[in-house]
Image (cartoon, protein in one colour):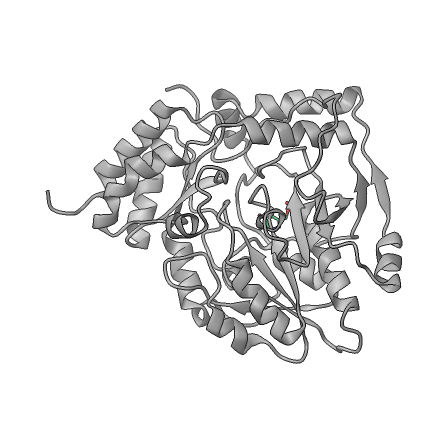
Length: 387
Ligand SMILES: *Cc1c(COP(=O)(O)O)cnc(C)c1O
């Protein structure tokens, strides 16, 4: 094969002339903003205002995740409190979550990693017991779980590169439409920008989409100093609202809803690796929730039997032109420059998860032949079981 199959990312569609309704229209109101990080920061700002008098507010997040979670929390003057994961899953340990709640806790963030929704109903029980806001971070998961079950108080969406709906940036914060006067004033006090979809936007879109081709991605990866896909901590600036034209949003939603996702074929092809100690992430969750077909994955995620095997498979796949990788590679405390005090070894499950996670491309350009070829390499390198 020529070029390289990008790890993630869908093409940016042209704005549509027909506005479609949003899947959250009946349950939530949307405030659009400049990014998913802005959306999360806004939700946290609102959660803090809902609990006046809390001196140094705390927000609970999983110990493995996107460093922007920490940036958003810190930007609102709050402190991130990490909770370790349930072994072999991306989900927070509920017992440790309950233990982490203090009288300064204002919110819990449930993250749908790579398209696998958190068990929000169970998080909601804990939040209700302690009057905490439940925030569904659905930046990697579309449609958000809360549009089916109106369970979260706030929902975070991202329209950035490498997210389910790529609009070259942007985000949305969904709320239940029952904001207090003070919360409304907070939102209205945030700066607001407008997106123009003129000539420059269209040129940028064409370039963006060209770089998603196999040749485009191979070239992009070779640009020195770009640090494509590297995990870094970046402090968040001013939280900014954004007007996103209805045609841009509608096109993004339509494009997302008609895309095929090869995750079912991956499952069929890779199931046999389970006897060699691999874990196909999300299978149980989807079986329980009965939503395998409707929820595409952002990337197909597995846990290798150990870190060495993960690294070996990543090397083999990349050598074969497949953009497979370990996503963030470290748990949150291990991210360069991140303002967290507890070290990674205090979250052993998240550290283990980070070292063993393998993600495979699962976007619209991954063909059935690609999946079979990827699975073939994985079985050849990763299956150490006898016979
Ligand atoms: C990407 C991401 C964000 C931040 O979204 P941006 O639009 O990149 O700011 C927040 N949470 C999760 C889980 C993400 O994956």
